[in-house]
Image 1 (spheres, rainbow, N blue to C red):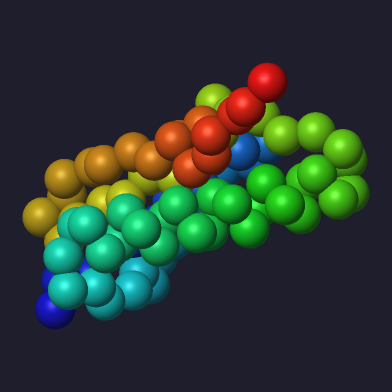
Image 2 (cartoon, rainbow, N blue to C red):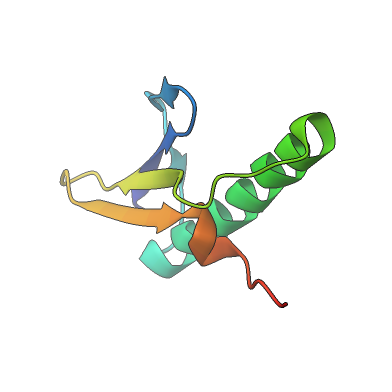
Length: 78
């Protein structure tokens, strides 16, 4: 299984040096969405706000980058 590193770009940059194994990019993106939602939930609880432009960058073993923004992880209804 390929390894994906999840680099977080929110109020600070956090580089994932270890990474995790997923069967494919789609599974890694689904997990990045779950992570973004968890981070946003924590931010809503502690600060009462979220920033939809924050993102998680998925880096493949080959160095390819794929971005999941926090805005990709939610649907906002009026």
